[in-house]
Length: 375
Length: 256
Image 1: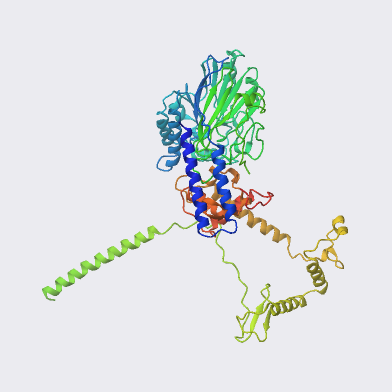
Image 2: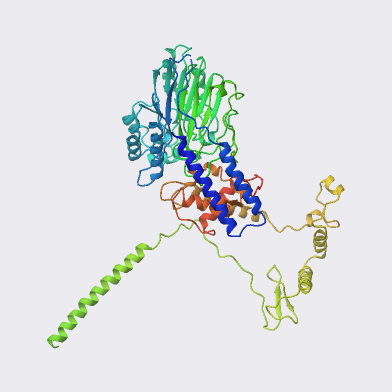
């Protein structure tokens, strides 16, 4: 039912564009290129029809393995809410994601909220977010992001949503939610106010902040937690920042990633689902598969260097289209214990990054190819 | 004073006080409606202009681009259009007047360079890779009026412009956003702004777009602000900052 929305919007856009071309031609402003223009318009329309439309269903695929049964969970992430009076668009977009997830049939076992619910950690922002997320039908697992944390160092978030890191078991899988966006103190020495600290951290390219890290205390907790889990049990980790080192300047980065990876290495199958990067992002380091989540607020450009080889870039978002490059997604946990990630991209075809693609190191089951890559 | 006169006087006083009160209120309102004083970090500069050549009203006077060398064209009226041939003669004469004020050796080098401009350098020269463009004049005699001070001033001024652009790019209030969305929220370090691809035809704008058109698109739409004039100090600073992030990237105008 979701695909209908984007296909309708896309058809609408193509019709509009054709009308614009016609308008230009009729105005006689175009050159000898009239024929070429018409051909272009026809080609564009043709390509759009040809490329479409194998609506991806959200039906579960039945396969047999280490998970007790295949199941799915959905995610919504990085909504960056301001107060509704200041920015209604971000609110509408989170509501759209909630509607998408509520429309899934069958419903996912649970929903992960991937962090950065608020933009500047304000009580009004967090409460507004919680209010909207309450409408979700399935239970929600909350993760914290740096935008939720650095105003009061997580006080209100913890009061509202509980522990920032925890683990749970579901259908034979061991799940861990981490708080991976701790930063070394850069504010005390400079005498910054909580709001100044928040604003620096909120600036992705603000070099005055420190690197994200899980930190020693939490790594100890993780070590103890994993000590009880058999190595054959599939593990799925949620972290806000990617648990590897991609691009330090934007904190697409976790400073103690190697130490955390070392704790996860002894397990047969590990998947990390992370937020923060607002884009289709795929990586694999040995036994660990990494998937980035989409944002509901805005897409980030790809980092100028360090992009993992397995990442099939999502097409460059169109600035004339309000929700391009945004969306939510569904993670199907196969019985092997690894996952297929279905990106529900608004106004576009859904994009699937499967276990098979990652396990074959990018040789099988390739996601739809990028046609407009980053500059 | 009769009773009637007294009454008229009173009414007049009341009316006057009322008028003054209304006038004051309107004044105050006008003042509060005035836009806040814009930040003056990068001021809009009046461009300097050459002093116009003195005219005698009878003959045309033509000025060279140095702003100093003037020549009266006998027989041509002010504002008249010269034939291309005559215009060429005039401009050659003006150039000669300019050369006459300069060192002959330098002029010779200059003329030689002008004569070979646009021609391919001979194979020998390019192989050696030595910039001996002007035979007969030693290297150190080539014209370069720029001093270390010039370079440092350029650098400082440019960096100031870029720095202001950096500030505007990262501050939703400075671009007049009404919804808290700044440029950097979608374009960290101006990523994916690709200034090197403009101008290009943008169907959504129904015309060939320049970088500033796209900047204004973003200000008006995602950021819900009011668009900037092309010469607005903030627009100029934004362009400077965006370009500065793409130093060394080849120009690819028209790329989609």
